[in-house]
Image (cartoon, rainbow, N blue to C red; front, side):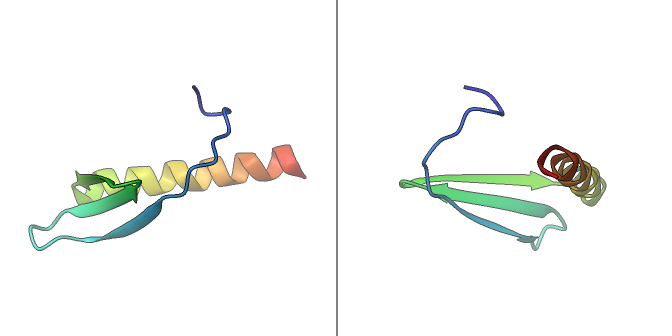
Length: 62
């Protein structure tokens, strides 16, 4: 399984701040919950990676 392997799995994702000053990405699927906490700087780095991936995907698809 890799980044290009398609799966037909539904999941819910929530992103928000915690009361401890962290950014949480919370994923739930098929009864499994995955909370991932990041400090604000890490969250900004992840956001930049997502933006770069979106831009790269645009060049592949269009």
